[in-house]
Length: 137
Image (tube, rainbow, N blue to C red):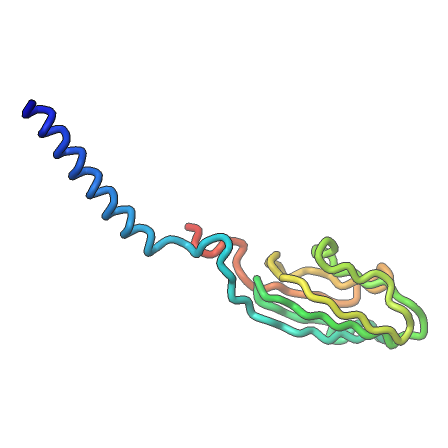
């Protein structure tokens, strides 16, 4: 019977030790998947005229919520696309004198996202930051 008592004592001690270690590692864990993430907010006001897109270059931090406003000062409708974010930013055709507004999360770092106006390159958006997910090693 003393062997069983010793075995039970060892199991209890190991269980207590695992509980302490488990609580210590929880304090260093990443935020829960449902936890809100603080994001930088950036506003881009773009104009399309006979000279192209103004400003031609813009930069935002990776992970930022970007509010985009586009005004078409050309005398005819244009089609506007942000290459690399077509699935997030659906602008489409913008009539002469028209304005479009929308938002997207800039979570694809890189410095060569082209704005195209009616199929022609008109400007570049840079998304500054790392390709690595925060907390990964």
